[in-house]
Amino acid sequence: MDYYKILGLNRNATKEEIKESFRNIAKKFHPDKHSASPQSVKDGATLKFKQASEAYEVLVDDRKRADYNIRFNQGGGSGSGYGNYGYGYTYDNRRRNNNSSSSSSSSSSSSSSSSSGYEYRKTTSVTRFQLFMGYINSRAFLLNLAFAGAILSGLAVVEMGRDAIWKMHNPGKSFEEAMESVQKTKSVKEKE
Image (tube, rainbow, N blue to C red; front, side, top):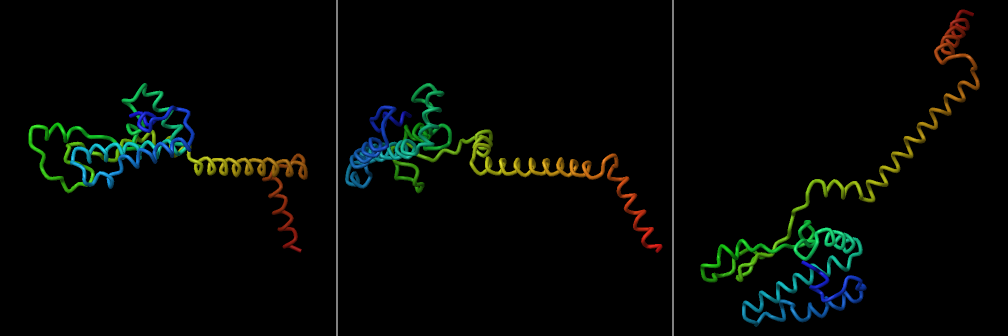
């Protein structure tokens, strides 16, 4: 699904153009405007409104828009849009195919289905790798990683400095030899 086509925009549209296009489509296809229309018109308008809402949600957010542009270009066309990656909505034709022979019955209790046979549902097809990469690239993780690196670097500098100071004040002696001489001095003082 090409969000730019849905909103009638080119790929370098500004946020103001996106907002204006969405407002026009929302006015035209809002479900409340078609409440008295026949069911088929109402379902078509609702579907177009939901598609426009999804397109607006993605294109108005800079991060989502950049991600969509990358994924859309990698996918090679309108068949593999943003929704296939778990961020938007998808359309389920299975219900339509199962009900095509039977007459239209009353709408089911699920708010995601319509009597036209299409089911409009939120996708949840995010892979573990995508979740892992999202976590690795999150600001909190990177800040924590930088903080841990700074602490470890500081500890290494302190350790090297401690060794350098020890060698400067005690040339030729190891720490163990120094501790033995301290113990001897204590025992001599205790005897006196």
